[in-house]
Length: 188
Image (cartoon, rainbow, N blue to C red; front, side):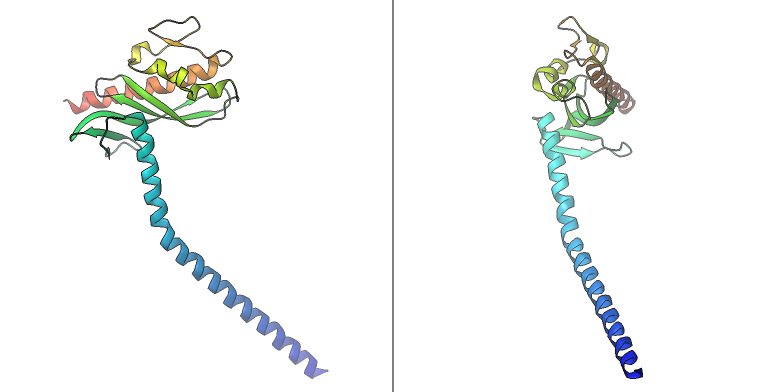
């Protein structure tokens, strides 16, 4: 009887050792994989971010981070700043709308991209479509106002999605105003 108890203890001990070794080995494999893939993932993320910025400022040859401005990039052509690509956010109908706004150095909207939103499919999500976005091109902060009756000067609201239209317009307007304040400080 005592012999059986000893064998069971030995068996439990061996299982414990095997489990410990398996965990250590798994951890080492995961850590090694992460060490190899993390730099590749970071590089890929930078490339994708640059592609998104390039889609907004087609003339840009390069993008440079702006010190002290989280998420801000200067779009460069022949070494000169031709625009700024900055994050923008506003509260829509169903939550936050996160955007990337491209603003020229003279304070006009070039384009924007919606990075994430929770707006109603078929209504609010139309804010990311070219038909709505093209209204913003060339507009200054003063003319970024949503109207229900179309004009060349303002932004026509999306049918059935006025709240989303106002939210996107507000976020882009704030981004333009921030760029204007930044460029005014740079010229001092």
